[in-house]
Length: 391
Image (cartoon, rainbow, N blue to C red):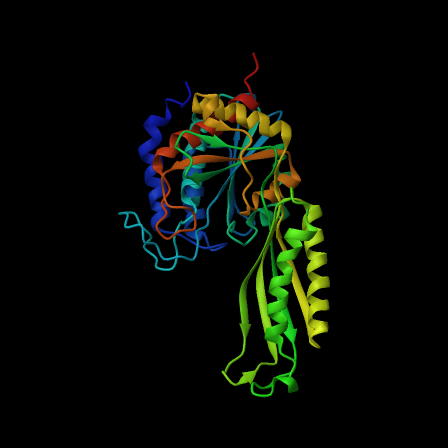
């Protein structure tokens, strides 16, 4: 069967968990209520171990198979944190907390992994061990790295790791994945330009950081068009330009901030190097000085080839048709801290269709509960295929 039949009995219960999480969103590492509820449910499922406080507020559950857990260990990950947005969905289960909402579907990811854990704890239809990972702070806090730094991979001996994210616009019941780069590295930069302030009526007596900054903004775009290979994706966006306080004053300083997105380490390094050269050179030509503070964020989310092929085969079983699984989806320039886990262990990250809904990070967004049986079935079938019961 494409969908695990037992999940029909769980669906209402999983939906109730999901909507409860949606009503009570929490930000970054402050997912105390969510973590406590996740741990409580896992304990109630009768799994073999529940550990809390991993990566500050992460939760880990361990489910051993019929052979007592000896052999391979598979990690399954869900993120728990919400976003600093005020919800406009109008749903009965909309956020009760203004300025916080689940606008990326992490409530659904958490609920689906809980449903998976309940089923696996009940059936134990596998050999080896499954580690369910409930992670805080995906939305900019690098919670995956925090859990890794707390010994996630070594303490539980994880051999492979898999994750899933909903995708608005992709029909429910369909999946998308690709080997290699799937999501971009997410870097940030801040440029401080220092000139010489003065009266705007006598600009020749000043060194105008706004003029220098405007030249920098334009020049940075040439890195993508003239330094990166046309076949290598890169984005440089200046999103903040702060300078000045009055119409008749040339300011002393200007600040520019923005983001860089790349799909390979080589392009990532090249962009940082070229930015530094351009910023310093252009500002020097105007008589100003400049500093570039370049912060490397999440790495490229790069799927491992063998695990991607395996994940795609599982998705085809769940979807019931090869046509419903795009195994060479176009990479996205959004970022994902599951990338840290894929740097530590082989694995794959897959998109599951959320249907015709508002896009993620939109105040009208809501996770589509029709996705629940597909997401749970994907994780369950993945475990049962990767860790088959010995004859």
